[in-house]
Length: 185
Image 1 (cartoon, rainbow, N blue to C red):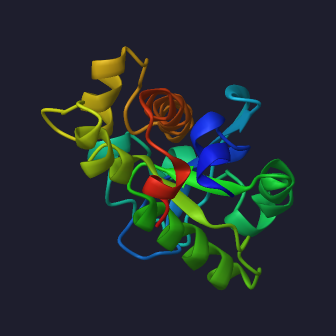
Image 2: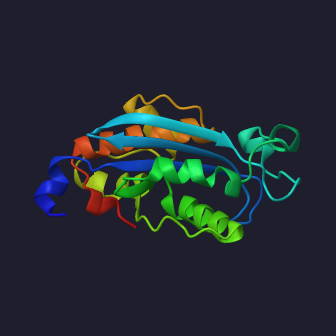
């Protein structure tokens, strides 16, 4: 994509967020997706996921427990619906994209499913040097802080809310002048 086009309009993408039950890359216990098409959020998807272990370590962060997750679909069972949602996206988007890319790839690998192969852009990266160069400095680059700065509604550590907030943040960063190239990882 040329710099002129990159600076004019955001491309079609899907923001993705995972909550995890443990440290393992395949331990997703919730996924949220938010589609951006034509420069606006057009669709959302959220699902709990049954993690590979009953040991849910991060309940204190996301509030999810084994009793809530045990009857949820596995990543492999949910993949056809997830893959359909991702279809047509130019790239995936996340706040701290290396984490969500690691979880997506780990879950795909554990399920024997080829990963989407879509590149990732990172709003966390966009809130750093690119935003500072345009005169916007954040007291912290945490999703909750930058969402507060822009007035973006957020129920932090709910994968659906985090994905939608990331999509909204991406649109705000693009409005500031941060380009897709500056957010690419």
